[in-house]
Structures are given as C-alpha cells and as structure tokens.
Length: 285
Image (cartoon, rainbow, N blue to C red; front, side, top):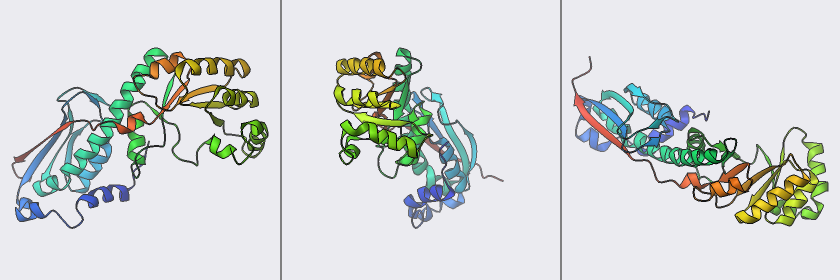
C-alpha cells in the first residue's frame, strides 16, 4: 500500500484552491445541493479512487459509491458518486477527476503490459523504474501496483544496484569481484544487482556470483545469448531486461530469457478518459 498523509490530501486540494473558489462564491452555489457521478468512458484499470474519496470527504461530501484501485472497468461503469453542497462539489470535482485520469492511465497501461507478459510466461515480473515524473512518485507507484506491476526501486535507499557509473570509481568490471565481496561483507541480507551493457560485462557479473544482472538496451538476439551464457556460469542468477521495454517488444525479451522486465513505459501513458456528471438534487435534510 502506498500511504498518502493527510497533508498530501490537503495539498492536492490547496493546489487548486489557494484562496477559495471565486466562481462558486459569486454564483452563491452554497445555497444548493448536488450529486456528482464519475464513470469510465472506456475500458480501464482504475486507480486513485481511495484518494479521491478522501478529497471528497475533506470537502464535506457524502460518498455514496466507489470502486477500489486495481478494479477493471468497462465503458460507462461507475467509478465514484457523492452528494452534498454544490459549492463543495465544484471545489473538488476537477482535482479528483484529473487525479483518477492520470493514475488510471498508468494503471491501465501497466495492466496491458502485465497481461501480455504473463501470457508468455506466468512467473515473469513487470517492474516500474524510479523514472516517474518529479513530485508524482506516490501516485505513479500506486498506479503501477494497481495495474499488477511491482516497483523496481522506490528510491536509492531500498536496493543495491551497481551501475557502470559506480564502477568507474572502483576499478571497473575487472575489479567487480572484490567490490562484490566487500559489499556482501557489509550488507549480508540484501541481494546485489549489477547493470551490464555488453556480453563481456554480463559474464563478469555472473562470474562474481551476483544475484541479479540487469542488462541495459541489449538487442533481443544478443540478450538471448547473454542470458543463456550467464545461467551456464551462474544457474541461480536472475536476468533483468531494461531499456526501451514496451508492449511491442516485451514478449520477445521474455522469450529471450528475461525473468523481469524493467521499464518506465507505463508512466507516460495518456490519461484515462472519464465522464463527470453533476446534477442539482433536493436539499439534504
């Protein structure tokens, strides 16, 4: 679960309403009651509803119905409905809707990639990188997970991932064995991942007994050779394919031997399309 603090929810509202809603105030919408219904215009994997519900309730609305993040919806299916003061409805309807559209776009694209990948190999994992747009980490990770993906890294603090850019300070891949030995001595409970760009680099990784080799931007035919040779040297090694992975080439990389697909492709999905219907209702007593 990705946790959103009360401050997160307040900031989402405040960002759009820094000094009140001028239009609703001038139209005196406080005198009316309204119902809002949000529905899917197309099939989608929905996300962001839990946070939208919290936003609605913060504005004083009564939430009537909603579906959980990760739910697969068909065209016209209801996402969320609420009722309450008309001014409050107008205060949050755009903010809540845009959040659902953005998150559901990522979740839907992730679900498409995960479904395709698992149809090729059920135990393969689709991992989202930390290359999500700035300031959107929580929602991007929530949407990734709602679509069936997993975080590759939530940040620099949770994994040991050694890049070429690290190794240029420690003697390069030729000195990788001593680097891995030092890391294992200092951190015994975490798996060690090393990125490789060439077959020679990957074989050096496999020779040192690293747990995971992340192969970056290697053509599929070369990746197949690389994965096979690395497993001959280290049968327990996990092979990650990274760099340019998308729905058009993912199946080929899985067939070539990838255990995990590492990609940021889902983060740049177009927003899902939702419909918002606001209607006046009889005053709530």
